[in-house]
Image 1 (cartoon, one colour):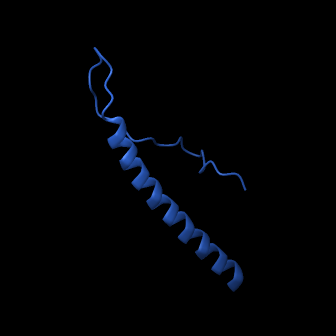
Image 2 (tube, one colour):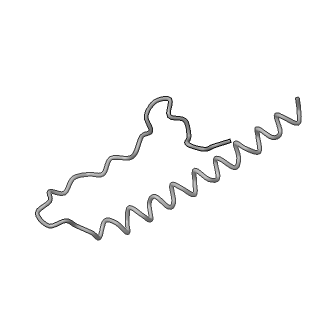
Image 3 (cartoon, one colour):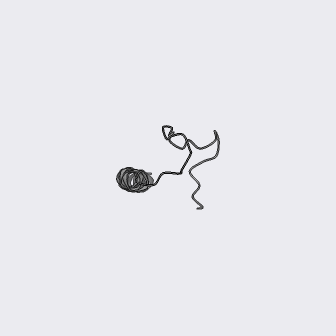
Length: 61
């Protein structure tokens, strides 16, 4: 049981690091894309992506 708990803890730490990295990348991408504008298109705020309820995290195990 302790081994499984340690594995789960490790997975949570990895997921947390990956999430932080993705947030950083998202900020950089948002900044890079903000330079592009479509002619005759009204500017509007970008809404963050939210997965559909029950969609899971998209990873295959």
